Figure (cartoon, rainbow, N blue to C red):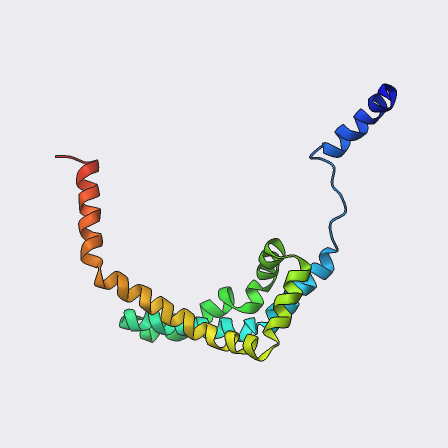
Length: 157
């Protein structure tokens, strides 16, 4: 028995080594499942809608940007479009979800309720952003006071 343990020890050490890699689940099918989810979630259209809404919110907050709308839209399309971020999104989803989970989520998005949630998501994000902005504006005085108190605490006269 001792002899078997002695012979097994190097193998156990090798298997425990961080340098030993094992065959990962089928990365290609996992990535395909993530892409299926992105397509089922209508991610391209949602991202385009969010880009447009974000741009309009920025212009509304800073009207002097209005003449630059086309330039900003071109920049966002280049760097924030679905096509430019697709592989990065796939990486994120593969990292966070198993292949089975991705397929389950995609199946949900293909149901009437799932499609409705996708349809409503940009509106909910916009309204949530507006709610957050409004809440910060309503309480900006409190934030300024807190900042000033902290600055005074850090730098007493």
